Length: 395
Image (cartoon, rainbow, N blue to C red):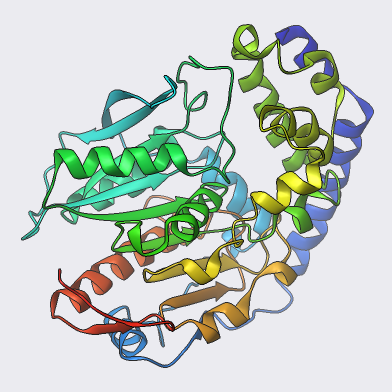
């Protein structure tokens, strides 16, 4: 099975995508020296007491993202986010069984000297679908030093976990995450819970907050390099070597669980497909019993229940993200909902935002500063107006 996956790397789509990406990257890299846009990110928000507090507390009006000249290319930022070594953070893995006998994994940070907060605050980190704890170790380490209790959520079948059920959940299905939140609440009944989504993990965060609304039991969240519209993004087919590599990693993960999924998925067809539409049609549409992939995308759109999101939420996106088009960024949402705040940088790539290769990324620092600021705001008993109703914090 693995040999079959490996052989597809030499296929024509992969070679064309690789060559095209290298040529375009070289052109953009040279062009990036010609004109330097403003280093102050653009902000999108609705005037409110919370927004005023965040602008002042997080220094957003003059908080620059100004990477050195050799880090201004989108592909350099994106690749470095995967290649740079993470901090040597130790994790303790805990397996948790779901109601349907499925198993997810929680990776808790260990042995980090922390500044104790007045009240226990758990940070649930949602990495990309094909990522795992080591990919977000810097974020977890910084969060621990700031007094949070970080834990990385690995979906069933991903993050080197076992698959005990013939089903892999999509990022649009937040029911496992719901059980995890309740489990953490049971263990730490007085704790505050926050979340940060990274890459495709943002889709899971948005799905969770939208589906469970005011009962999500989350104090605040942040999305780093979110994809807001799966149908718009994935219906255009494979775009460059990143999509090829992402599909390849998805296929490798599926192959690890072939014994559990072979009765539901045609692996011969999956290994031959090189488009997200076909992949989702062969895998997730079958597992969720949807008649076609368009119905699956509609049901799993991250913003399908955006009106129900009832917690302060930060979005950090780069306009040169090679994964997602800047056209799909929903700026108007942040101008309509007073508890949404969007920060858009001109540079940063996908999940990059690196201004110092030896330090935590700019976006991760901002995300944690944002969470600190929201908790500080609500701790003072301020009222947050969510549009439909005004809610006074009881934190």
